[in-house]
Length: 169
Image (cartoon, rainbow, N blue to C red; front, side, top):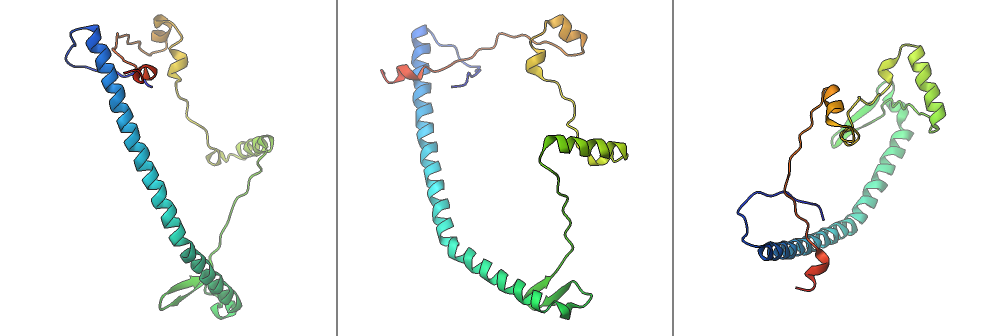
């Protein structure tokens, strides 16, 4: 369970704090049960929709195949046109260009070198430099300040519910 920060009315004793933690644990459990029920209902609805849509998707695929086969057979009628507008829609062909890159990292690295050599830097995606705060936090405040960052140290309140002990209550 994640630690949480809070502001609010103070309790009167440590026993009150323990009881409040138990109450939070119970509320968390109720919320989790509701979320589980909701997710089960969503999964059931998705399954039902997929089952109902399956024959429709098969029919759509069958019709798409028939249209494509007919258009292929009648392609000469299109002459220089790339499409034919019909009452219920348009069918046609369009030029589709894909760039296929090798999956091997060493071959991709060679491509990047060649792109840079040709001045095609716009074809290269570089991740912008970002600061890793977790690594920077490992340094002392003076070093962090020297690089232009700041350190903000606070005593922030947090809590964590002991879920194992909730069963005893």
